[in-house]
Image 1 (tube, rainbow, N blue to C red):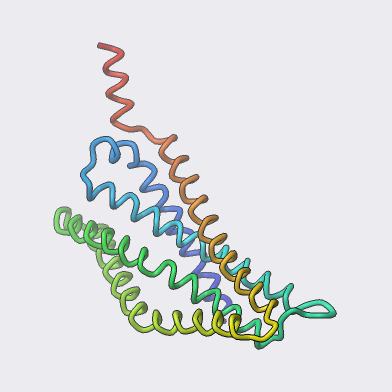
Image 2 (image 1 turned 180 degrees about the vertical axis):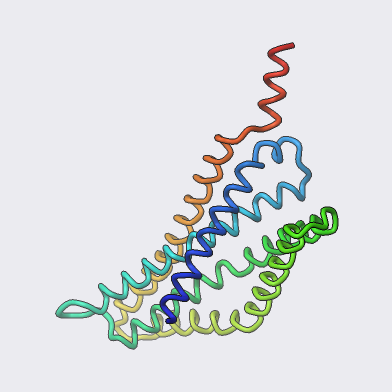
Length: 217
């Protein structure tokens, strides 16, 4: 049951990330040409949310794949208990890396949705503002409750790696941990900007309309 919930959460995150890329991509040209500073911040906020969202399933695949190989074989590099600590440190380091960008970009998106709800006062805008309010409050509470523990997990893992005698394997595990998190984030943002560029390229903008009008004149 827990596995099914995790899969559903990942699918939802990917779907929201694709939608954010679509929204940012279709508005990119016009916003960069005519938009206010806040509008541009909003676009980058959508990109940040998407990049983090895409990085989640990538991180899971890399984390579980690496622990599978590290604990397998005739001479496993890690014991099951060490692999559990390794996995916990991976997710904790990822959380520490993304939580403040998520909170900052989420704040910009929340402000925009509240403003849109007051201006439009229709079901869609009010529902969006309600969801964004819930998400921002949830993420903020999560940061307050979990950030300290995540920092502690990362500190404990690297502390053991530095203090272990002859701990060359531990040191390599620490490097692998950092590489996994960095690779997941880089891959997530590469997917994000590829999609944003695709949607920007395939959508019409006022810049193109002005260019056509200028050619006709």
